[in-house]
Image (tube, rainbow, N blue to C red; front, side):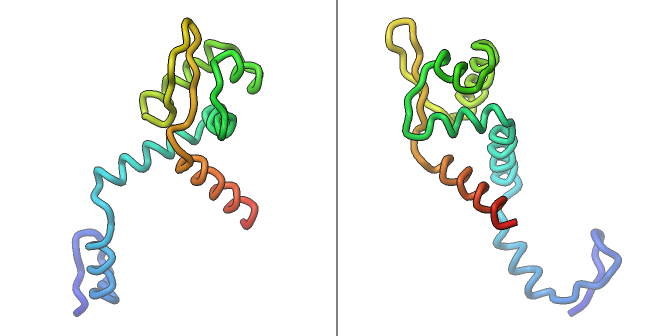
Length: 119
């Protein structure tokens, strides 16, 4: 059945397919959360930090040397990653060590690299 709606003045060509896809789409709240994760990892320094933490536990100073940016810049980026629960940390005296909670995020970033390579 073809009918116009408020979104589009053109008739819906395949109403069954459209309704099926609409029912399978994630809720807006979930999509916003997903978009926020991609927004956080879209910064080049944060992405470099995440790749640096692959299979490694590093302190702020080590990350600063790896990236070639100031300790305060690294701390700022780590705070954003921490607030979004994308890195974990532990204190050892006055030194804070950062690591990844698991490999899921690195797997996502590596898939992104494969996508770029195949593009």
